Image 1: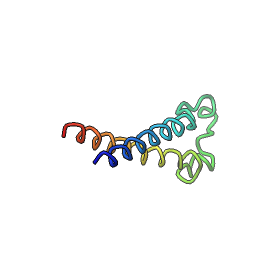
Image 2 (image 1 turned 135 degrees about the vertical axis):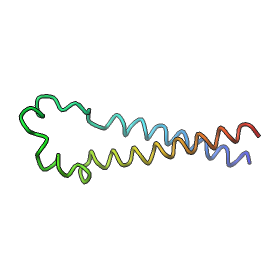
Image 3 (image 1 turned 90 degrees about the horizontal axis):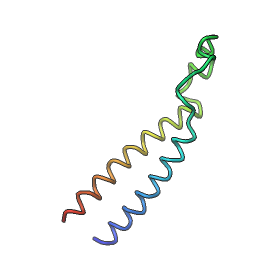
Length: 80
């Protein structure tokens, strides 16, 4: 049981570091003056899911789910 806890803790630390890096790599949500000029209707604005920014958002969601699941498992395991 102790080995599984250590593995989960190491995985949790890796997920935390990856989540921090991925969030810092993302662009801000404020469009600035580009939205006034209509820059939101460009090719990258319409196909955001296939762009690098879209991939970062999807990867962030996966890491958040992993973060919540691992933290819940570690929390439940600490009561036994």
